Length: 484
Length: 95
Image 1: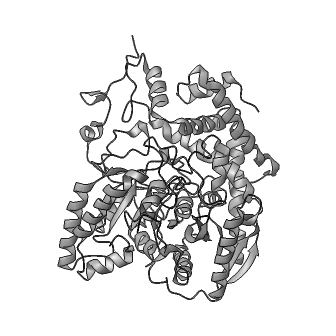
Image 2: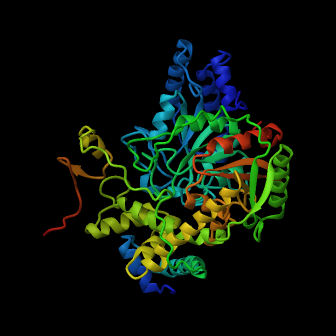
Image 3: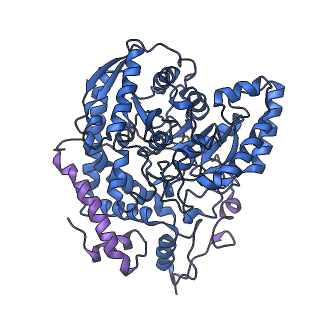
């Protein structure tokens, strides 16, 4: 039962072959059995899950069910959930209960999806390995000595370990696609503005975007349909028609033009990752797609620009954690300044503090032009590169991350080494484009991901290409040993 | 533009984060590492390039100025560290 995809679960629920309650109980049992070894969840919401499953079963019986009714899933602990802890992986929010639901949580709940729990993550989504979480690192189901990627590492590991058929995540610089790749599952970062950010704890507001994890592109289509659309509560959400993403999955990709950016295959790319991704491109060519070499000349500047813009926005967003209105407060503050400074020193971990300091510096008087303004100018150049490339082709394709999953602790001491893990993903966030990662093989037992990048609001096409690829490959059907 | 130890403390003050003296050199090293790497941006000429703040260059969507939310102060304050009579409590700021 736990091996079923969202589409298979949905079909079984509608056919009355299983009930949502049975499925929910089975997965809760599986979480109890396997999660202690993975640490993919921060909170398990067993009681609420059973109640939601019973309600979904009633809906299924009354014939008012949609494709997600009764489908169990896990939310990244960055999404606010009314009455359930929302920690964002931080001591700062260890005992925080949001007074409202995020729009993503609300929409999926309204569609009848059943929340099993809240997933572990890098603190405030700042990290690429899930090692910055206050609640401890997450292990990769494919290799327990390896990281699952980050920042949505718990979501990715849980879906890979078959603790749930789907999960939500957020992607500011690669935090959905990179863990999807490193954990051997699918992850979609939608176009900026496609999914509401309301109730999603803010990291870098001009880059943050929510999206789904699952084992197939077909499942992502169902999930995105339940998440996307205008939200009056998020002024950056876009009023753009939400298509039926499932409808176009099987469209032929004969004649599709796939741009292969030369810069995605340069120095720093692991040889195994290169050969798996090249093999994947050949598979797409075999399906009738045409490969075209394209260039993104400013690509290598995306990383430095990102590491100015994201910390700058974070330093501003995280100013709200002041020990006064909610979150951690230090004991016996001497005065107001002491209250602020010690609450923040105690509540934030090292990487979060580092990024706040970098961002504060970049925005401070005298340095603004050299760092922040410069980074925003580079952002436009990177974005223009993508625009020009996507004028020549329909989608872009390349590796999701330059290496397979690295070992726990291997990069923890060097922030810049860690940042390199997102070198192929964060340009997409700077431009605001959608990106998809699908499993494309293994290197020494650790998964490799193929990244597909589309034009604005072209998620349907990415899912179409991903689905066609998965029709003729079986990487996504492999199960990590011990999680059968 | 290397950051010195006292500058780390100044930045930490702006960010309202207390940093212990023994941690300052570590932060200085990390920040300098990040800034050195960020300075790669200097290799490209951006004269005349309009800064990009948002993927759409969009402006804030406006809505009618109407009250749409009910008053839920008590609910929102239920997670606060210290409140009294609907007010947030902080250490005395005026003697």
